[in-house]
Amino acid sequence: MKRKASLALLLGLMGMLVLVGAGEFKGAKPSYLDGSYEGLAASHGGDLSVTVVVKGSKIKSVTVKATDTAGISDAAIEQLPAAIVKAQSAEVDVISGASETSEAIKEAVKDALKGAILYPVAKTVKADVVVIGGGNAGLAAAVEASNRGAKVILLEKMAALGGNSIRSGGAFNAADPARQQKQGIEDSPQKHYEQTLAGGDNKGDPELVRTLTDGAPKALAWLEGMGMKFDDKVFTVLGALWPRSHAAIDPVGTGFIKTLKAAADKNKVQILVDMKADQIIRENGRVTGVVAVGKDGKRIRYNAKFGVVLATGGFAANKEMRQKYDARITPNLGTTNHPGATGDGIVMATAIGSGLVGMEYIQMLPLGDPKTGALDGWVGFNVEDYIYINKQGKRFVSEAERRDVMTQALIKQTDQFMYIVCDAHSMPTPQTKNSFNQTAEQCVKNGSAFTADTIEELAVKIGVDPAAFRKTVDEYNAGVDSKNDPFGKKLLGQHIDKAPFYASPRVPTVHHTMGGVRINAKAQVLDAKGAVIPGLFAAGEVTGGIHGTNRLGGNALADTIVFGRIAGQGVVELK
Ligand code: ADP
Image 1: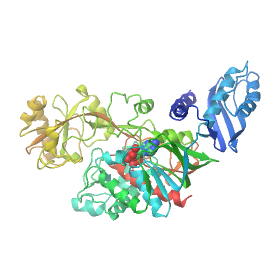
Image 2: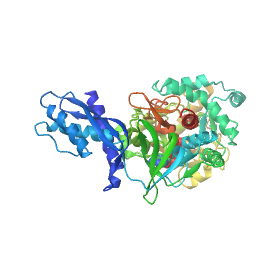
Image 3: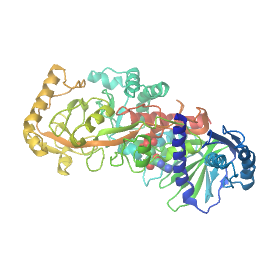
């Protein structure tokens, strides 16, 4: 049963592939890429698998392995492969009397060939390395590969670089004794490792987690070495579980992109925007290039002598795909993501045999703008210094909890709605900026936050019971003093008692897709059986297996730089 279910999932994905791939090029006659391809389909007696060999762009042989009842299916198994070879297509007549097996063979051959079909291209361009995606991970890979002398082409489908990386709050987790000791914070890569692994319910791959947490301090130093500036004071970004988040000085994620783009430009990386990759080319087992489509609709083949780095980000903006993997993530939920986070990399990589891991682990945040789902527009900064209240003016969860725990608690509140409440300890002046480069004053002006000089006045403005709100704040402040918070919050900062006070309405929003293509610690992409796919590397949100069920806040940017660097180094050095 389980096998059937996973097969159904696979077939669903294939359906999507056919839509993305073939539908766009009706009439264009495809050729086949050389190699040996495996395909799978459900048949009467169980799964049926085929091996299709393509040589000289021609289908040379089809071999069927079936568990169907012998006798009934024999005719199809004996006759159909030859017919397919003769027709050079799976579109052949079924064998009467064995139609079910015939259909299954045809389906399995189509499945096998989906990674082999190459539609005509307008031209072919040569490079050593092709990077798909121009967020942090792709840019970091491009910089490291070009640092090693490779000629790199980076393809970005949107009109500008940046992806989700540039929209993020810019918090970067790394153990950093030089900064942390000044604030009396004890930390180490080992502690970061343990918290990351446990924070994802031990579903992350320990080797990948270790690579992330050991690599994070070096990645931070690498960025700083290229001139990127971080605040000297570390903080705790929402869901980070520990004060090791480094705030970029430039607004939101712009500092990362600016720094990486400058380094890429210096190394003469060719960056092409409005260029959407839609196929990874795998020939004779090895990934050799990418096909991408420009704004003019022309398909261009980019050959990659050393290999390809896949860095296309996640799929939180693809409502169909996210709901397919987690039915609770309904289409009405907004997302913090940029519109290009549609999982293209997942579709392209699985078409050539990549394994997937943890696709069902999709992170929601309790911090969405009620109208858009966006992450910006709220007043506050440090986990230690704000509280959440529901429409009854009551707290309902520790604000220092894991992101999944907080979001699930929010979902249980009236209208799945809360206010995030802070005071002048977080925002010393109305001109103080949040992580999204917005002043408290701007947030109030544009209606995304409310302010007042007393808790009671604020309560009236946001329509909650003043007495209940007052009691909540008093109890919180008492817990700060006694270090015994009623909701078990361990990261406690200041009282909430200094005017002006702020409240920002927030709802659940879809944020990060923890699952993705399976990689090893060298950022090499693995196939469904765990073998390396030669010539293909991946990094960033398109990959899975690092964050387990729940990603810690501030770990994504660290992930993109650590694994982006490894992918860029590996694609040159392991070629
Ligand atoms: P990460 O840094 O984790 O890779 P980002 O979301 O910051 O994640 O960056 C991913 C980038 O990949 C985005 O800029 C996105 O537009 C780009 N991208 C996604 N799909 C494609 C595609 N098919 N072709 C080219 N670029 C793509």
